[in-house]
Each structure stands twice: as C-alpha cells, then as structure tokens.
Image (cartoon, rainbow, N blue to C red; front, side, top):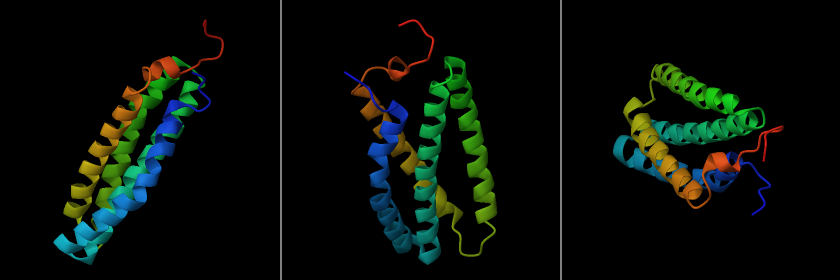
Length: 140
C-alpha cells in the first residue's frame, strides 16, 4: 500500500464534508430548543470543532515531517493550546447578549466525541497511525 497523503490530512479530508450537515442539524436543534441565539451558538460550536480538526491535522502532519519528538510535543501541546483557545473563546462569546453557552457546549461536546469516534474508525481500518509516519533519515 502506497501512502501519498499524511494520515492526519486524509482524516481531515474525509471528515470535513460532514461539517455542513452537522452545522445545519445543530442549528435547527438549537433553534427548536433555545431560539435564534442558541441556533447561532450551536452552529459556531460545530465550526470550532471543524477548525480544531484542521489545526490538529495540519500541525501533526507538519510535526511528522520533523521527528517523533515533534509529534509528541505537537500532540500534547496542541491539546493544551486548543483547550485554552476553546475556553477563552467561550468566555469572550459568553459576553454577547445572544450567545448561549449551554447551546455551544451542548453541540461542542457531542460533535467532538463523534469526530473522535470517526477518526478512530477510519484509522482503525488502517495500520497503526505511527506506522504511517515517515521520518527522513530514519532506518527503514
């Protein structure tokens, strides 16, 4: 099997098309359960999950071209940065009168969980992710 694309980018390429229907479903659910502010808040949450996926894929693909230590640093450090960014964004958005923090979190948590499940399913159908990384200068 010849790999032409980093597995992280492949996962993002396969899962990003699900963003539009997820935003629509979350928006409708938010509208029905909490009004227009909740609809916008749930849609923003899904968009944040999609941006998180792209940032995660790009950063890990970049790190995989450098070294195993870079993958570890970006993997662990990336989670910390994304959680801090999510928290800061939630605090800033919560100051807006129309924003629904409950709607945002109610969409963000299941969307993130579903994304992780889909990533695991996709990567589980392949070899172990670390087997797909190639480091220049490593013994093969």
